[in-house]
Amino acid sequence: MPVSALPELTRNRVATFVFFGVQGFAFSLLTSKVSVIQTQLGLSDGTLSILLAVVPVLAGVGSVLAGTAMRWTTSATVLRIAEPTVIGVLILVPHTRTLWQAMPILMVFGLAVGAADATMNMQACGLERRYGRSIVLAFFGLWAAGAIVGSSWGALGSALGVHLSVIYLVAAVIGIAATLYAGPMLLKNLRDETIVKGADGKLPSVPWRPMLLLCAVMTLAYIGESTVTNAGSVYLTKGLESSDTLGGLVVGAYTLGQVLGRLRGDLLVQRYGSVKVVRAGAAVCALGFVIVVTAVGPYMALAGFLIAGVGLSPLVPQAFTTAHANDPAGSGIAVARINVFNYLGFLLGAPLVTTLWGAGVSHREGMAVPLVMIALIVLLAFAFDPRRVPGAGRGSGQGSGTGPGAARATPGVGGAETVPTLGS
Image (cartoon, rainbow, N blue to C red; front, side):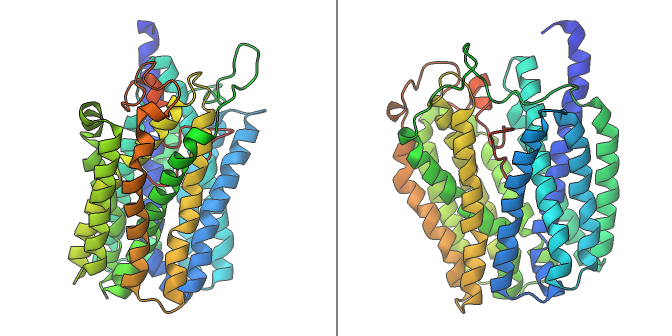
């Protein structure tokens, strides 16, 4: 990389950091207040399950539409519209009183989240290529930091007795101002650089069979994450009869656990290998859910959610890294395929648990669903054995979670053919 290009790329990188942070901030502000919104709209647990299924579906649609838009515009243009919409539309949520009033707003939110996820990941991928080294994980660290700040701000507002409309208004002003400031510094004229074609202009063939177990692990992992982020606050406020303040801390505690788990994650994989790290992570995550299910109070449950976040933290990145090893050409096809299963997990996670609650199952018994799903990953960890992957061990970073190749396999790095990750 020419030295003369470094200052401009640094500005581009800072701008992308801002958009990742705002995205995590906005997403956690909504998910950490699910229990408050449920009470505000007078929704049963069964109806809530439908609402929770709508957002990830529309986010997938928004991602596809953003990818299609790359035919005539750039990722920066779409991102500069989508991200302020994500944070800005939250202003309207507290003023709704029925499901039918809230549904159009949440539909716009879902579409905007998908479009923003896709385009900000195009920006991250484009920057990584220009830097010539792995830098994508740092962007996801900013997403997590934003999520912690958003959850904490929501909890603080509730503790101080601030109305949800004021909490969201302050957040929207800050978020929109940040995106307006950073928008002009994004990479210009960048479309989708995440899908690499061969010399003949065609996409390479990537076999499905070696990836089926990885796709299963991805689904199970996101069943756990979806339950925490979208139903965790409901579990605390209804199941454990805690305050809205403590309920709003669920997402923050879980995300903090993920940040802590990823601080040394790459080093652990390099030392012990993916199989042992994934198996241990799944066991720790299951332990966290055991604590949540058996919690005698909200503080014990919050500790369980934090431990679950620590355990789950290496699972998804290693699934992407292992999938990437099935694609030696680095086309992004394997990553795009497995990324779709994060949405399947979201659709099977919180909606399933809240449906069970609506059918009369106790909150503790319902929260046992992700516990069982995560425990299954302990049995499926052998899928991460590099000997199962054609071409594994060849090329930089494969199987270790490090290096430029592995960075392309991190969650959400996708565009036209990738459904971005909701959450971690």
